[in-house]
Length: 104
Image 1 (cartoon, rainbow, N blue to C red):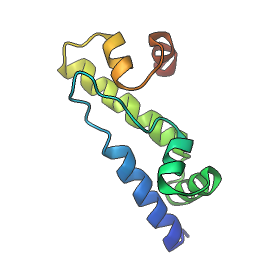
Image 2: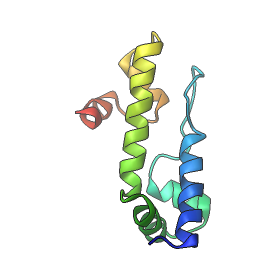
Image 3: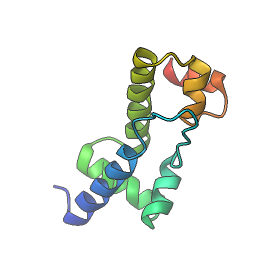
Image 4: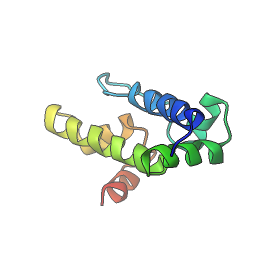
């Protein structure tokens, strides 16, 4: 059973993840791209954050980030005229080729 602290940290993590979306601006930059970025923002050790999130949700932080990025990419592909390269750039991928590999 998840502790209150784990639930609180997980709620904060999920809130930080969600406030980055939807991407609506032409020059959107995702500030929090990986587990360490989220841990730094929440002032906790990355291992503690990952343990808490996994305890509450059953999935590691990286899975949540990947799922949210995939969801947003699909939304942008369906509802904008942006190219894959534009979407990759706006979602914080350094290289379009990495974006392609991420989604395979």
